[in-house]
Image 1: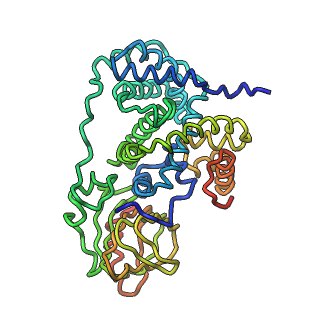
Image 2 (image 1 turned 60 degrees about the vertical axis):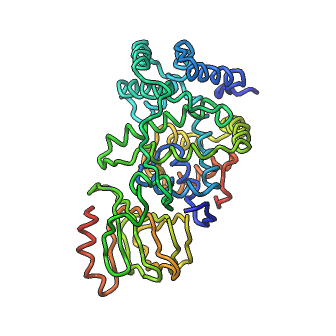
Image 3 (image 1 turned 90 degrees about the vertical axis):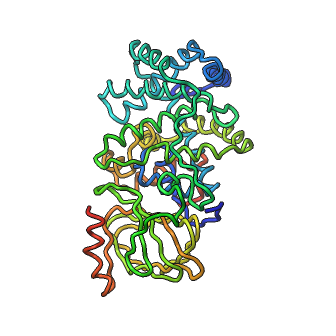
Length: 225
Length: 197
């Protein structure tokens, strides 16, 4: 994903919560994925960190006992300073994967063990957690249609590659979209390229088309919330 | 009339803090570290206690953890990119996010470092950085002109780390009211995105 001209961004309240650290890290990962390639949001987020700095420096001092200081002074004697931290980031090699996601996708999208849902749709889970929100990649083949679906929680989508459209418009690389629960929609990937998205689901998806209803028990199994 | 509630950080203090960080980075100066500790540890503790009042031991642990990070990462601090307080805020925020992430019932392997670190390294634009340092002064001043309602919600989001819906529950306000107060506050700080209030 290159620098993009995305038209759909997290709103300023979401960015505020992100800058303040008052957001769960699942949603944070989606926001960071968007911000990495969106200079506008990055600038805005830096400004919102300034608010945090002001609030921190103007906070009323809380008494810190001297033994806390002594313990800290002892701890820094043990703590190696200036040595590079073990790099948690795998170096992505010539992939289009945003840096934020390389920990989970070190070798590029092509090397992942995608799970096929049907001929046009495949998914890959980034989070192993069985409860909690679910962060996954969704790949829709060029021209493919996602089954008409409805979901019970909030759904966040960040487009990593390609583009898709639904009843409301066309979305391109970098776009950050939020759908509230019970909105019904049926996105279609553009014809020229597979579309890969990062998605966060707060609740299980339900497919509403006649045939795809058959898939519901399978999906619930994968989203056992 | 001078507003005494909000004592602004003056330039001399900022330079002093930058000198301490440089001394820590360049010569492992424990005296400089001790000065920085005295100034920031009580703030960091207040920041941690706000999220979890009553957990003094935990707040002390967090203070220690943040201060050790400052010691270890001082060489990564660039005075031309951020003021010491902004840099320290981000370290405190990340440490607190990770601390509560580990306690959360939905444990996740997504760390604060994963989501925030890549965003830091890339903002190497000095022009923007210089502009933001100016803006920090402006924001500090504007903070004292927020209404009590607005200050309250902003403090809950930043200091207490509460989500918008948690703030709404706690203040027994509709979610929409909380959101519009935050938007109004942002707009007073000159930080609105041109969205509709």
